[in-house]
Length: 261
Picture 1 (cartoon, rainbow, N blue to C red):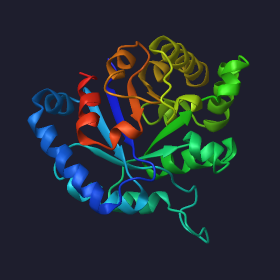
Picture 2: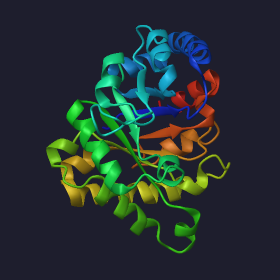
Picture 3: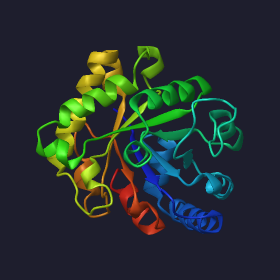
């Protein structure tokens, strides 16, 4: 049975002081929630937080001995060089990061990152020993014109290009985030989210084989809240959630985590 993966993407919120305050409160809550602690210890649930670059050291320090994963929101594909403003895989590893988000819709559509660039990032992340959380998803115009599946298929094929089954299996997490549901208050119905996540799993089977499809974690992201998390997480092909705004408050993030049990 696949584990549940609960991830909070903080975007450009929470500087180091606010990050320390959040992590201190969340770790106390975590220690008091025996069911969550037991599921973490048993490997049934993983909890990850993705703060801004400047807050990563504070998050890593404040998480103390808890099993909360700390990851980055982005990374460059080169290990070093004249890339002003960028951060590399070795830099993230050195401070204690284990995961990084690749291809969030804001990186795709605001910063114009291409499938080719995202593919280079995934390869660099895997080579460097980090776990990529690779995001795919369609615009509202894509959904309304019936292009959801073709858009996501292209993103998967191009983004995961030239990876072997060994590269992929148990090393890549996929997050489905319909762009029209991010930060809008709109949420894909649980059934709609399941349909697309099932499509993603079938595409992974085509690309990397049945074992990879059975084992890959597929997350849903898009206005996830404590009130809808349980319904989303109950779907067969949804193994977790990538949470935005609701992950900025320890209490609401804990409620979402508890919905995974």
